[in-house]
Image 1 (cartoon, rainbow, N blue to C red):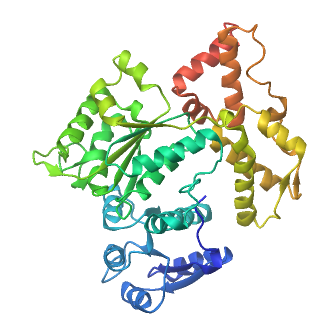
Image 2 (spheres, rainbow, N blue to C red; image 1 turned 90 degrees about the vertical axis):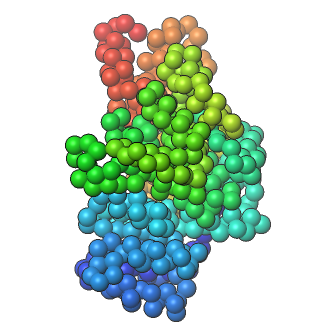
Image 3 (cartoon, one colour; image 1 turned 90 degrees about the horizontal axis):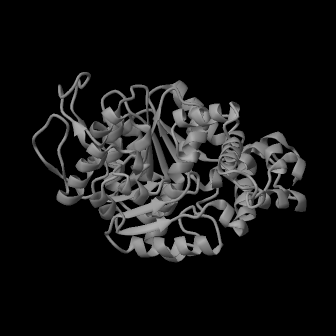
Length: 452
């Protein structure tokens, strides 16, 4: 994993003209051990920056006289080693894009929970560590770059591919099941490349409605469609000079694929409702949990776009094929949550280790992280026993047995295991399975009617 300073060595400058917000943020961050300095204005903040080493600036957007965007611009132009998080009570996509383009690494909407604040800080410090590591590669543990954990042969192959991909300008396609860490691989490529000082902009193509995706990616001009009350830049321009990570690329329509292909060929974008072309210098890293070659065969994905995206292909193996990494990851997550929850350091008993290694992990690393978090919350013991783990894991049957079952029976068993692993959340289960909610409902209905 990438390591950054201990919390008590991190200096965070919080800037907001609202005393109540300053007090709450300062109290919460101080409780985590961070050293916090506050400022009521941009002028006060700039004076602090000139006199005190700062690792992270958290600034409000809307302030009197000089606003937070000016502070973001000032920090980005004068302090290469400071990470920035923007907070605002007036959220909009346009403001988010502006903040990111000017140098903010994250965008937090008011009112926000303590968890969202802590997560934003963790992400910011991780980005800062990755950026520093990119400039000083000798400080990295080469076998585990940029937040990735694992010493298995499949992960060593991923690390090698990351190093090769980082030294090129080629587009990259990352494949693998949901929850395997494809975005971490994309971030590792970005922060180990010559683009590390420029933005890394992740976009979940499957999470944006088809009618809005073009506007989100390319931007739009005022009046170009109903509701377009102002002109906005898109994620391509926000990522200019850096990397645009297109997750779930398989969920884009054929029409959108044509437009993406044109951008990759011409290095120019046209905003919705505009005729002018705008040059962009963006490296594309795409990811999918589906087989794009099969989609090409079915005419659901353009072959020419597939070849453009897959100049370099990196496959991230499922956790069940990385047995030697399971305990390593579990210990990393346990240490993380021990710090966050002020919980004693824990160990896994031999029986618990056996259960962890025997389980199929349909949700992969993300599911393992959720399991460890749940165990750490529910148990005060310093030894994690098998009975502390979810009953589903203890009762699961290895998938390489029972060869007398039909394909439909195996399928519904897998679906039920995935559903149980995410506490019945059908949306999350559908994402892991690589199907939509409607298909999931139909399969469950068929099984209830005895068709499996």
